[in-house]
Length: 139
Image (cartoon, rainbow, N blue to C red; front, side):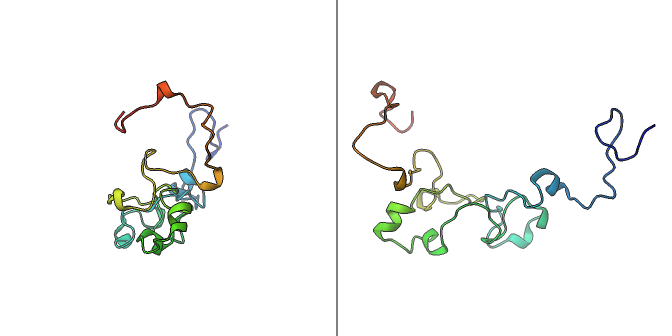
């Protein structure tokens, strides 16, 4: 005997007609995994075709990743502490095309920096080999 809505049995389909779970929730869970901003952020979020089902954050409150303050993003805080502790340490959450050279976030492994709490010092890394090091950035 077959039961309607019993997924996992051969030849039977899951009945989702009575389910209140959206496709977004099925894929990303009920809270989602919004670690990047929607391409429509910040000015055109109302034009996002996916609306509340969008997999990307539409506001600073909605994002679930570490981000800089608005002042830090605009590079209005230009003190030594910002450049040591925050600049190019967090991966960029901005989903739209933008000028990454002037962005305070890291975009590539070449411009990403480690947080100073990891420790910088005169002792070379034991896993680094001089023969494996590239002399140019494009390699």
